[in-house]
Image 1: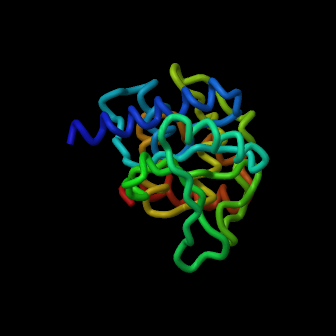
Image 2: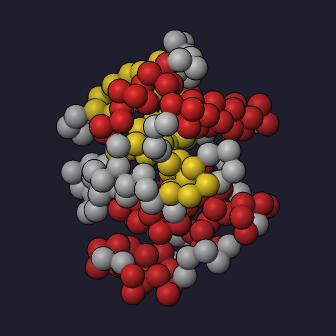
Length: 189
């Protein structure tokens, strides 16, 4: 188990360093961004996640691909079950699975047709030490827009450590406000 966590962190560090060196704007999103935010408040509350999501502008995909391929990642575009289009990812080597990859989320675009709001821009980010991560506001909006079971769990993690509470409701679009209220009303899921 410890080795799996270390491999995700190494993958994150390698990807972030390559993008930084190439001058490609990005922000870590998803579960690893949640973990970084939670760790700022309570390291013992951090939930490890194998998923590695990086927010990129679509216009920067070619530059990101050059940078990431230079450090051993392998670009793939794969179809998503039941979704038009596909998923862009960078496998951690030629024999890696999609679980061992950097998944791309495009800035300013909806993740899926059912998503009520687009992802934030990469400018909605800040330093998290060795990498950039999406701001807490951008992350919460992304998690509320996706609203899958794991997104709801991540939101509960942020609520549990006091990063998100009912004061957020007034700052959200109606559909996101309703979703956050549902989680606040059902803290155990």
